[in-house]
Image (tube, helix red, strand yellow):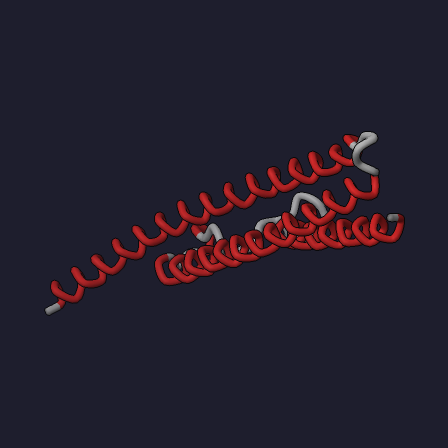
Length: 153
């Protein structure tokens, strides 16, 4: 009976270790996607800003500004939706990792996600919060630019 219980515990532990590896890999993949898309978002916004200067005799700066601002608003809205979903997924993986770590390890030295790392600087701002705030600022900026160009038309 003790043998059977011990093998069940070992089997459960092996499954948890496997899940820990899988969640850690998935978390890393989602994190890379998040940063890649964030970089692409900034590149897209830079291209939109450059297009303001492409106005010629056929297009007034206000017409170009309105079109570019609408595109900027659409891209920013889509990015906010994608980013929010990705960050939520990242948090879900981290929560699962923390749960498994607490179930598997008795020593806190082995925790990777269940303890807060020491900050290298005195700021207590998370990158994901900066990302969220940044995208809302960009969205709001495109809205202001759109209103400005509609007003000057």
